[in-house]
Structures are given as structure tokens and as C-alpha cells.
Length: 112
Image 1 (cartoon, one colour):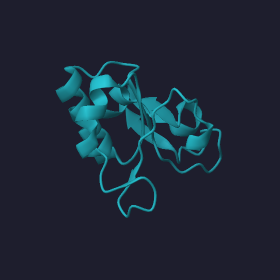
Image 2 (tube, rainbow, N blue to C red):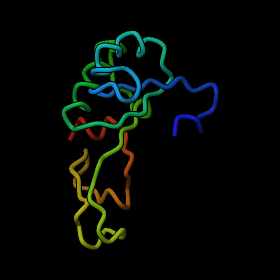
Image 3 (cartoon, helix red, strand yellow):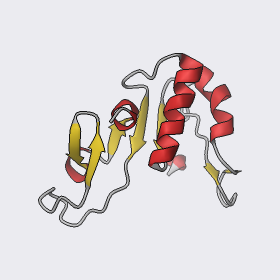
């Protein structure tokens, strides 16, 4: 929950229906936010992660490892990686999200 974040963390939220945070997409806010952000933590779809990577490259020239982290949604059936239900394609190959994630560096998600 955002309330548990340290005061130094600036948090931005957007939902399509406006039920929480800003109504609409967060992408239009990114150019301004990326100019001063120390880090990005994101949750969204694979298409959103590609757009986020493009926005970071446009504002910061490169998408540096360690700058942006993203949550990969997955189905967790066994929680041990044995069933392979949570496998996702990331740079370097297929990874079991329940063992290696669910948070991955954005570089690994968009460069797969």
C-alpha cells in the first residue's frame, strides 16, 4: 500500500476509470516524471512495459539496468516452479516468475 512507503517516495497512480489516482493513462505524465525520477516501479501489461521503455529512452536516452522495475503477472499454482505455470519470457530466456520474480528489471522485460 502507498501509505507504507517512506515519505521520500513520490507515488503516482492512474486507473482507467479514475477509481484510484488520476483518471486515464499514466503515459502522458511520464515525460515530466522521468526527468527527475531516481527510479521507476511499475505494474501493467506487456504492451505498457514496452511503452514505458520507449518513454524512458526518449527522456533519458538509455534504459539503464536498475532504473526501472516491473511486476510480471503470473499464475502461481505450485509456488515452487515445478508446474511451469508461471514461466515468462525475459532477456536471457524463460524464467519462472514464482522463483525469480515477480519483479524484474524493465531492461529484461522489454529486451526479450
